[in-house]
Amino acid sequence: MTKENLWKNYTDEQKKIIFEFAEKYKKYLDSAKTEREFVDLTEEELKKNRFVDINEKNELKKGDKIYFNNRNKNIIAVIVGNNIKSGINMIVSHVDSPRLDLKPNPIIESEEFALLNTHYYGGIKKYQWAATPLALHGVVFLKNGEKVTLSIGEQDDEPVFSMPDILPHLAYNVQDNRKARDVIKGEELKLLFGNMPLNDENENKKIKQFVLDKLKKDYGIEEDDFFTAELEVVPAGKLRDVGLDKSMIGGYGQDDRICAYTSLRALFDVKETEKTVMVYLTDKEEIGSEGSTSLKSTLPEYIVGKMLLLTEKNYNDQILRETLWNSKALSSDVTAALNPVFKSVHDMENVARLSYGLAFAKYTGSRGKVMANDADAEFIQEIRQIFDKNDIKYQSGGFGKVDEGGGGTVAKFLAYYGIRTIDAGPALLSMHSLFEISSKADLYETYRAYKVFFELK
Image (cartoon, rainbow, N blue to C red; front, side, top):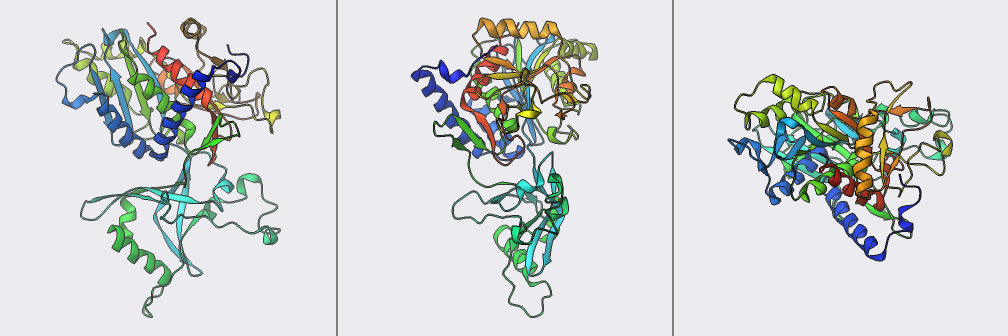
């Protein structure tokens, strides 16, 4: 395992490659701030790399490149190997990130402000979302069936939105005695949406009506259309280099799109494979993998069964079960990096460090490994051997000291099928914040590691 900062031993040429890789990564994530946007962009990239929708195939053979888009919320890409029944090498990441969702009936007027009511999605520190520029992304279906795609707040000439916080001069009674998680409460996450009144004496709620009229004029959206909308509030702005040396990347959504991006790049660079290899980009991980686009759904069975139907003359359910049982997976999710300011939460001998390479977490969960997959020694040894053989830079990590807290990933849902699984991804600082921090070295080494995993026999 890596015992020192990787930047110490990189040549100038290696640093150049890493920095160029990071620029492409930043550009990709800047264009995909929601799971829908990431899936749309990824489908375009898959087509450019000669992947074909599986629904267009009547049979599958070795070397075929296929993908399946599940309801525009998650996407699966596969390169078919010699014998699918022998198992699939899969890398599974999630493309949803903590955010704020608009409620189904979001627009209210209060004290001559139009406000949007939100509901937070995933584990966030709510106070981080106040007094900062925010953008609105998503889709709305109009009454006539037309689909309207929105992205407001990313361009220089577009407005941004913001949650008003209380000034420190007046916070003593209403906020200063609150616990950190309640500095801003859930029902206080209200988005400033307008302040200009409609010039009509007959209207009671003139501010609200002004923004409704503007929505109708600019986008065709009426108030009832919010019921058929998926609109997400995310930080406005692009990923940025961090540090005078530009060794780090800061920005929103790196949990877990850093793993999604690197696994895709690794798949695109696979030249030939004996095993069938898969990139599985899932949704809803941040809320416990609930829903039809999550990994807890039967989609893994659905897509693997569909592949087997196109290759096996005598397909049956037992073949499906054996294929999954013979498969191996990296649950590619990020882990907590050593925080130099809050060192006390970490077990210093079992913590991932920034710029030390891909981080393995043998188990996640909390309070006695509850709700975790616990990878078996034989599978870890198999991974270690191929990574050592290919000079992959990796380390061991975890979420913190025993009983300090914890978290979960999709690993346990893969293990449900008998798939041998371990969590593996880069470490982040400020995870689940609006400005997560990754290392460019870890980004590149994660790509290298995933590419080698696809070669596992």
